[in-house]
Length: 132
Length: 197
Picture 1 (cartoon, helix red, strand yellow):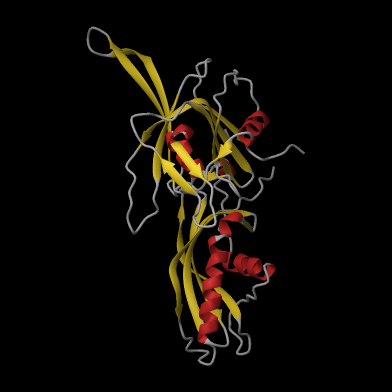
Picture 2 (spheres, each protein chain N blue to C red):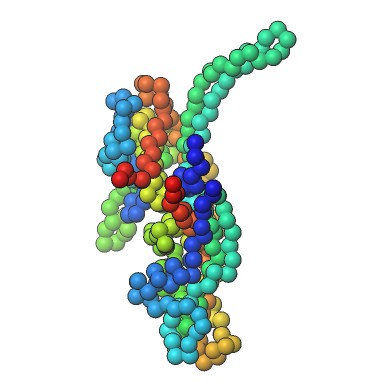
């Protein structure tokens, strides 16, 4: 039995961000939450049998466009350093920024400036322990 | 053998503050009876590289064989003529240690930084090879750790070094692995990380 489960990378990245003191939350975006980070997996694929390549978008809300962009640029450093840690016990093999931060106004929250960037994050699948 | 996807490995570098490829003096002792801990201790005493390119490390065991056909042309036996093991990687951190790995410390001069200039290197390339040395390669995948030891290896190829505006300057090197005196040029040690209860 293959016994390989894809991790919930949105949840795991949000937990890791909050652990590091970077306020992150799950959608939907409350109107008074800025500054904050939201993580969305927008796709990806399975590779090398036990490795998933996750395409992840990071949305950063702040009080001004400049602050959102600055926070997004800072966050790219955090994302690039992900290979040094584990998510849900799964090894992070690589983490590459695929789209640099850009201003990305949110039509649902027009008063909250938003910057977005994308990353490809390679993670190991998790394995359920075998039972007799 | 039972199927166990947890034992399917991805070859990532075991590195935190130093690189995963190390070199030191040629190991003349027979290491046939070494344990993983022995290999771990050995690489601690070696000099570490810096960053290696995303292409990682490639180990190529090349068995050269010769077929012995019978009268009607069918192969009745294949005999081993030679074994040639090589490892290849690209160093992308341009510093003293990387250049010493690639062409030998004898051909790299380092001048410490001063108040008016940074650390300076003088690399002398010519018709000479880096000396034979011992080499250690540290890899990991979660709790699984792999150490490759080459007791006596020599960098024998330094491929083209490309200077352009779209990629890191890399030193693509190939290590030829020589006999360790016991017929084993390359030793691979694996710890699966699963401790007994």
